[in-house]
Length: 197
Image 1 (cartoon, rainbow, N blue to C red):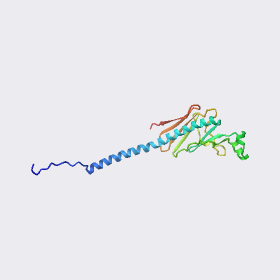
Image 2 (cartoon, rainbow, N blue to C red):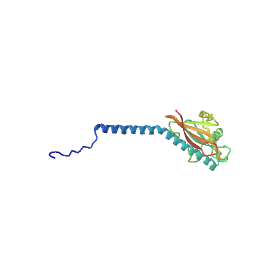
Image 3 (cartoon, rainbow, N blue to C red):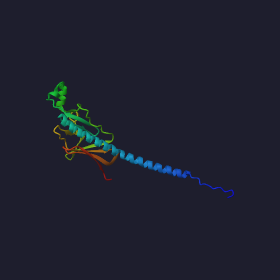
Image 4 (cartoon, rainbow, N blue to C red):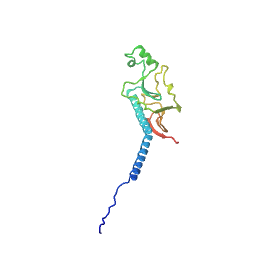
């Protein structure tokens, strides 16, 4: 063993190996980002659908508890909770000017402000379509002659409500929809529907 030394192999990564690993990590990261951004519209729509179903079930409870009739006005981008105001009732007419009473007589559905209940805001990019008795409703028909909102759905003090189907779609992804169903008696519920491409 003259003059020979045991040589140990150097364990390290070549530049090529490092670049391959970085490329694979980048590819995996981009796929994860693509999948999560692809699902964001679906997740947002499903979240809003569930939030809206909970709100509608709360409206039913509020109508029964307060012994009043509530309505949900809607168009393509906004929801508004209303209550039915009978101008002939003393508690409604007390303290109102003749103009205010006339406004209530013209449209007894007024914004409901007696509670912390509010209609949830419709997120940007969300598209709503309402079906009543198998007829798709034109939201422009849900206003009176002075452009004041009329209810699309009613939640009555007798613990009944308007049977409906409300479809929520997202403008950035047409592969799915969230549908809210209400039969008029049971709790409102939401489901995710996927479309075949």
